Image (cartoon, rainbow, N blue to C red):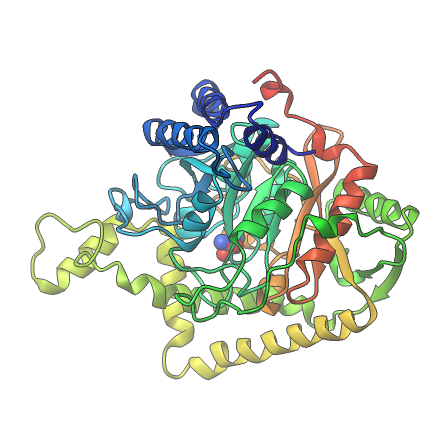
Amino acid sequence: MGAIIDISRGVRAGVQSAEGAVRAALDRVHKANHSLNALLACDADRALERARALDAARVAGHDPGPLAGVPLALKDNICTPFGITTCGSRILGTFASQYAAHVVERLEFAGAVIIGKTNLDEFAMGSSTENSAFSPTRNPWDLARVAGGSSGGSCAAVAARLVPGALGSDTGGSIRQPASFCGVTGLKPTYGRVSRFGLVAFGSSLDQIGPIAEDAGDVALLLKVIAGHDARDSTSVDVPVPDYLAALDRPLAGLRVGVSEEYFGEGLDSEVRRAVEVAIAELERGGAVVVPVHLPHMKYAIACYYIVATAEASSNLARFDGVHYGHRTENPRDFMDVYAASRGEAFGPEVKRRIMLGTYVLSSGYYDAYYLKALKVRTLIRRDFERAFEQVDVIASPVAPSPAFLVGEKAVDPLAMYLSDVYSVSANLAGIPAVSLPCGFTAAGLPIGMQLMGRMMDEGTLLAAAHQYQLRTDHHRQRPPAFAEL
Ligand code: GLN
């Protein structure tokens, strides 16, 4: 059983207090966050007050909810009506949201206690959390290495057990890649499964919020709480939310697992390849049937993603103009300079690069050659998956081509950084759900992740397969040695 289910059961049964669970998490944050920089902000007073209110409600005979007393941390691009929501950017360094994201309302209604906000690459653009304006997050397994990104803070916080669970956002791999680097379980739901209301937009046709926890059971419980229709996000899908926890018992027997050579090609680290192959063999031992599938357009996924994502980013980030929100330059020369200097001073280099790339691919004369072409390629990629899922129930692959790299190793080479998303972006382009789960370690002791991708709205099958795999293995139960005592 994962820590989330454990705490919520204990609190509901009255054998553990919400206040105790929250105090313990705050204490761990206090002891360990300075070495990780996983959390950017922590609101202890509010968290303790909420925990005490939950305990009082339970004593008075009210059900404190399915996440009763569970301390959680949220990526800092998810709006909270308390504290600040920085997006890891200086442009929003003091931004206080007036409203709560849909997921925040859902979590709090279910009895969860949000204790803080986690570090990320600026506006979720990056794969290492090094693009944060507030310093990188360190990997709990090796502090010289990155936690991955962009949800590096959320994944490092769960890996070091500062909190039992967290939310991240995933536009091209930002939940799954850091989950694999940190040895935790993370899910990118189907596009439309979780409302994006209150998530600061990066690539609106790709972004999804998703849960990160120690195991598939805890991820299933978090997803059950945050999924579902919300009229405030017009892309939110109005279909019932299944009981993901009840579905976890589905056995591996007969599950058809697709394996595509396109995910095991050039550039894949040999230790990662080996670990994922062994993990697929383990699924087979559990009764799954491995079926080769062909995804011929996957080789265009990175190019396609970096056109679609930057185009959408350049449009979404136009709202940060020095007038409506956030940073405004001190002494503008004229009216135009309010925009130019405010943006120039407060956006980091990667965000500027994306805005320029996106503006370029959308500009007249280049629109058809780049943006329109990328949309067509995106359709081909989606069709590849549709065809594959006629033959298989899930597709297994590595999450990332390498384990966690050193801080600074790829920071000066944007292309090398972009290539770390080579196995993750296609799920966002196609809109399908995908989970990252720990499947082994390198000789140097770094976690390795396996990705399972599924059919639209079929998170249940992914989580059941992940759970059955985790019943047979203990990679997900390992703790980073430096944080084992917390
Ligand atoms: N690393 C990818 C990028 O930089 C994905 C980021 C994300 O999923 N938010 O765009």
